[in-house]
Image (cartoon, rainbow, N blue to C red; front, side, top):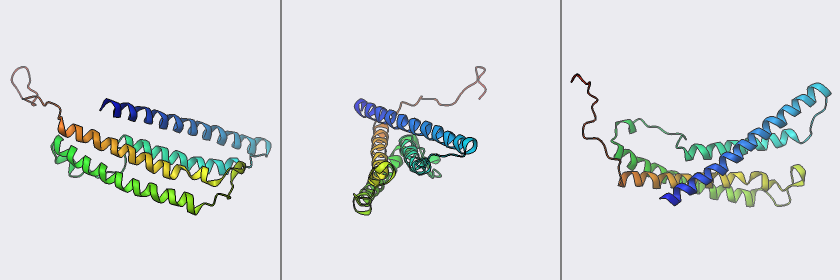
Length: 177
């Protein structure tokens, strides 16, 4: 379990670092573009298309981190009425369902990348368009990995529940509840 925790930690660290670097570069490039346009009536020709691509990358990396933190879309209407062990069972089922869905999305995105975008299609800086869109299968694949790691963590939580105190009521020192 410690190996999986380290893997998840380093993977998350790399994802967060990439996200921070992209956002920093986006803000700097946008600021430079605004200054150049307003102050000098100039602009960087490739900045706007690159920024649009970077928005897609930031969105996917944010979704990956939301998946890791289990902050993605969730309806927990019933979950609040379940015991902690029952919650783990429900979460294992939901996370494994997410693994299946994101795996299928990874395959579809990969197929789109290979078949939908021709290898000869070039974009900014004469780089193949596939490079810009590689975040699609990579993002869904990382979501699948994080969902699987979350499922394993919840399975471990179910198998080894935290010890609950015998008396969970908080009593006042004078005996008043």
